[in-house]
Amino acid sequence: MLLRALKMSFWVFYDHLGKLLVVNFFSACCVLVPLLYAFHFFEIGDVQKVIWISFPVFLITVIFIIPLVQVGLLWMIKEIIEKRDGSLKTYFVGIRIFGLRAVGLGLIYVVCSMALLISVWFYAIRLGGHLPLVGYGLSALAGWMGLLLSLSALLVLPALINKNVGIGGAIKMAVVLLLDNPLFIIGVAVHGVVLLLFCVVPPVFLFLSFAPLAALQGSAYEILSRKYAAFQAHVTETGGIDKSVTIDFGDEDDEYLCRGFRDLLFPWKE
Image 1: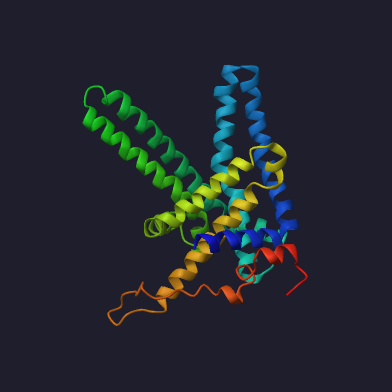
Image 2: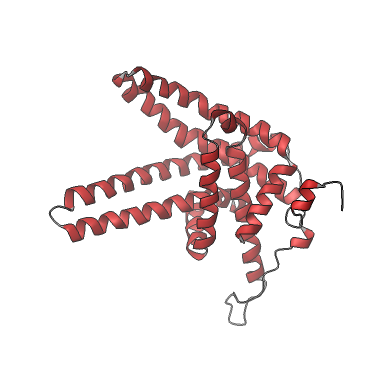
């Protein structure tokens, strides 16, 4: 499944490179402008402005701006996968439809992430010396929960736009998919981290940051959707789902899955 998700994300981005570069540039600017403004006060060493300006601006960017641009991109990717085409207008439509819920998810994930990070430190340092078994045990538990939270973040926005559910429903769906497909999600996460590391260079970030990651997220969710659609088509007599069936992902009929390296080198040949 991972190879299919990677192949689909590559061809989705390749086939619609122009419009995705434009949207990525717009999204990157929306994120970079406030971050550079916040970083300015770190450079000059103004502690007061770092506390009262830089930190709030950073939180606003992470909680509000990034979820908004990413949900718009994911809505655009969904249209591209389903209709083999998409428009720039779709990006703003996605923000209008799902923006409020995306911001709510951003707030929840940031608050939970900060709470878990503090818990890892607090239980290990504060309790570890007096009650090592309890302290380090709780610290490890908080760390694993933080990892679970981070991995589920890959699927929570795709779940939101594909299922059109509320904030709680999107989180529940993301966690269920993660627990049922841990190796697949870890593989997607590793490639997502590689993409983000590649985007550290500012010129690359402007054009190849949010859009490639959205293509990977959207493709991963699409592959999972096809997997569960195949399971659902083979419901047993007792009402359960037969997970032993051979899954047909429709590779031969999907232009994002039926192409290979030869099509990249010689696109004019059949």
